[in-house]
Length: 312
Image 1 (tube, rainbow, N blue to C red):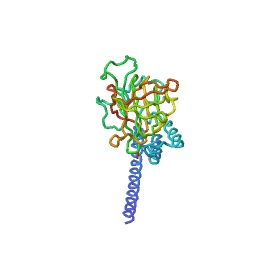
Image 2 (cartoon, helix red, strand yellow; image 1 turned 30 degrees about the horizontal axis):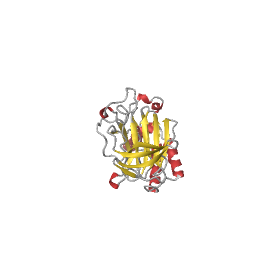
Image 3 (cartoon, helix red, strand yellow; image 1 turned 180 degrees about the vertical axis):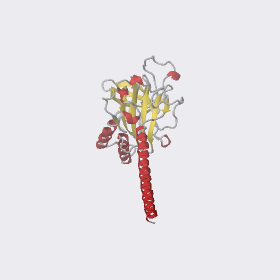
Image 4 (spheres, rainbow, N blue to C red; image 1 turned 60 degrees about the vertical axis):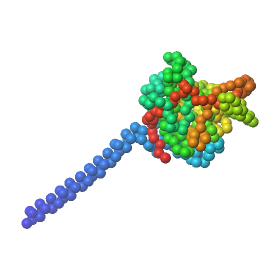
């Protein structure tokens, strides 16, 4: 009787130890699996609340809610957004840091991390369709619109309050002179060398209607060449800071854009293109800007964004 009782007690203890071991192993395995999958998701670009891009996005949402169309951002808000925008590592946006030293190693028009196989212009984005107008490239200026390499747009986020995305420009392409009606825009040159030319309306000037559309006197406020990573973010306002600007890529380059609020064609807030006309005052850089059609050479294709996602 005593032997059978001892054997039963031993069996109970053995079963208890086995059950405890299995439960502990299962718990550790679950945590290991959870950690294993959590790490690659962050590395591969899933949404991360700790990313610099997420912090920039959240601050942009705060400012967008406090700023209506036509209202200029306050200087404190601009300073905060510029600091956050400047702090975003290229790796979070899907680029290798080495691209800054050698922008020619990546062709935004074909083999870039965000390039797309799409061959037609993007027609659904409310972002401007700034076009590729040739200036110069390694292979020479294209002679026809079909040979102009397209600008690639990488969509990161958009709602009724803001748009965040990246424009990738092959060398020699140009985002033509265009406006940003009632908008605040922050632009950071991520890599490459870019020439920027920007105008604001001359105070007190009036629109004049001509056979080719409306025209108005504008003053040059920027005519500069920027090179990453030393270039500071550009800031334009509804009525100042170079609201009408054009970008010309001197090397392959990419620009991170924040638009507050976004374009809204159905509501009358569409992108208008301009061409320079008569020079009124060469010393002050005052010229006539004439409305024009979107250039035929301008093509924008939708690319695939491969960086960290943002969570609204």
